[in-house]
Amino acid sequence: MSPKSVLLWTMQAAVFWLVLFVPQLVVYLLVRNPPTWEFVLLVATGVVGLVHTAVEPSWRYRVHRWETTPDAVYTLSGWLNQEWRVAPVSRIQTIDTKRGPFQQLLGLSTVTVTTASAAGPVEIEGLEHETAQRLVVELTNTTQATPGDAT
Image 1 (cartoon, helix red, strand yellow):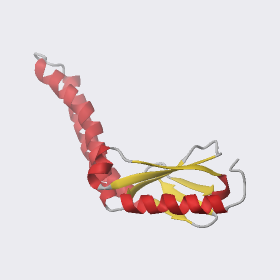
Image 2: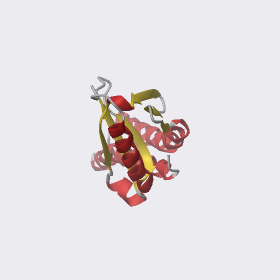
Image 3: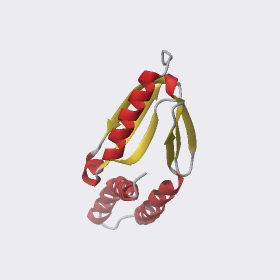
């Protein structure tokens, strides 16, 4: 996990809260004599947004872990609801990378390991792009060398 993940998650949280806060602020400023509840809602959104943006990224960074072995991919993720996932290599169907605009700006990637699990894919977020590329090659080679039909 790259330390730049904290900045990525901070940027994502800030954008989320700004999308909620700015329209509320515009409405509050445009309405003559706005009701008190609008002011309370505006302040509450601002406070919750600031606390979330300040706390969640570093908390997630302390929790998030990943490891690969010849037998499985292991991930621990979340911040309030934490999830431990194990994906056996013999069940891996696809390995993908994705890079959103903020990830590209910071040189980060997310690796998605899709298995035949009803729980959905395993995601490893916040990897340096070069690390992600090496991981994809490593997992691809390990998966091809592992017997089984990934079902």
